[in-house]
Image 1 (cartoon, rainbow, N blue to C red):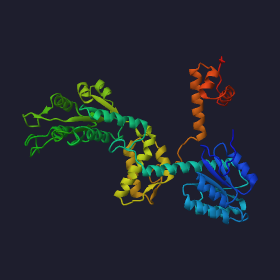
Image 2: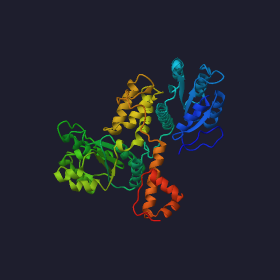
Image 3: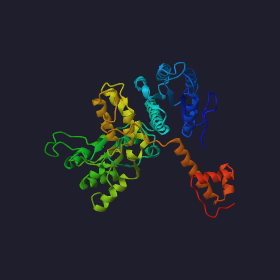
Image 4: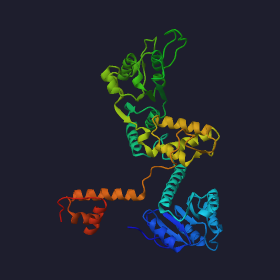
Length: 466
């Protein structure tokens, strides 16, 4: 069912608002009715009335005819209205209408800030396509502005809004207060060290040191001395006593990143330390006792390594009293743009590009990219774009991602409503065992209305109960 165009002062429903400024009453009605399934259409016949509706309703998009009274054969009124909208309501996307002989005016309108133009006579399908693209741009810019103002940080150092990461943050709050060993699982670049630091900051050890060691970055023959330290003369080149990272982490947290890369002999020595919290430096026979918490991380499957004999099962149980799995960035679509906004501000400060931000194409590309390198890849791309970008508005090309048609894959409001309607009707019918009278009562509609809704959604039932 379509909705009639709304005149000034009528009630506005939940559809996005479109202001149509057109002095031809017949064309005004035609366009209003044709677009009423996707927009609440507010109509005006001249510039002054259009400005009144703008102030009252603040529509998301506007379609204006350049030839408006008192200059219907020129473009002065339409261009003046456009300039007012661009200056006073910059968030509104404006599409201008012009005849084929007025294309110079249409191009001028675009140069003044119009989003696009279309030629008369009106092709409704073409106009609808332009409007939907403009609406998506408008939503995208609005979200960009919102994210520029607000960053959701559920834990210190962590930016997240996705349900998956918010669940992780809730788990961290619970486990941080208990002095147990935590294993962080996740692909490379997902932010495992940030999570480890958050656990440390939320624990009673927050005033103690946080010592991070990447087991994959240190050669096997050096990792033991890095962890346990050594006495002078313990080996060639040991010219002075050196405190290891375990000892340095006393009273705090030792983070063992990529623990799956630790060699088997060192795994045995680490296990002995975890059992009684004592160890000996290389070249010493004196026991040293250290009180610390172990947080470890890996992007490898330790269960498979245990079966293959490359990781000790007893050590696994010692370091994995509780595990936290980080979702990859491709499964946290809500977080990508938010994290990018934080990163662009950080590196804009570093490289003195204080006004750096993202264009619509860049935001769309960030949202659509699969991010195989996760947050680390995103950070690298943003850092390079801020440093190398030729303008303050970073593009998809600056990020090395290519164009993404400048828009996110948002469903239309109509699609969302239809899906929600279909889902609730099916659920109610199932709960009522297809009793239509009971289902209609629960849904708050009449039986004929329910029949019509079922027909429109293609719901067919056998053995319908009365």
